[in-house]
Length: 330
Image (tube, rainbow, N blue to C red; front, side, top):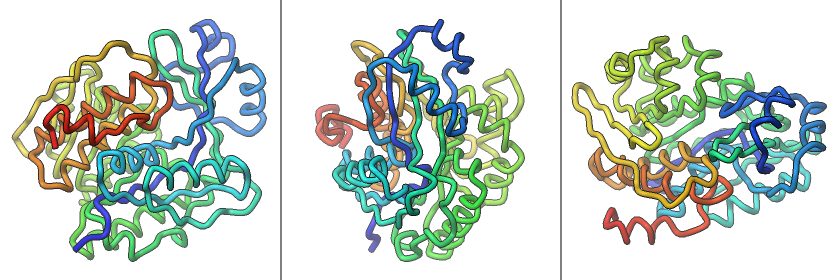
């Protein structure tokens, strides 16, 4: 018996979300629709220039854990915060979602990570992230009994930015595979792929990672090609299972030479794309750990992603399990 369906490992971040226009991004030298790493001084500067903002606990893998829990799955999370107000907010929020979270806080410095997210009228989010306490996540934060009892351990590619987190992930993968479990990752961001392409490919080809999540831009960046079909063929060869999202065109699941395409759900309005990929992963992994077909996993992923982009903030405000039942997916 397993205690958890999915363990996620990631940067524990509180999102500070505000709307802006494209000119604001230009004036403040912000790369649109990407995750930009910033230092403490730039974090303070951007915060001072933000309009009215909403604070919401985020972090890619934390969002995925929250999504799994909202679907009725058993989720756990590893991620480092500081002993400060934002750290308390993060811990409260993820536990309130029903996620097991016991990572020891880091002390008061560096402070808990925060990401200033600017959402433009088209729903695109441009993230400006100060990692803060995230960089302190290391092998000592791995809880071996949790990894051993999780069907899938999932981590975000963003963890390759803080150096000691790599050691933690490799330790998680070792424990998971020794206990007959599987390991999954998301490529996170095309700029992240550019920074760590060789290492990501090695994780896949070495069997350290079994299941890979990516969007269209990320998989093209991974293989340095403009040919989407070529990129799909290559990722199918490099890992056991791949799930590639294509925005309004849905997603494709790949295993060996087999492919399953699923449509995006119909939505009324794109409000904020923050968390779309994270919630796709939560839907997919919930289905996967409950024995569903890869096609159904993709449908659950598209449902969860479609729901979260119709709200502000990266964690579902409505019950995903109810939505999935209404859609006759669970």
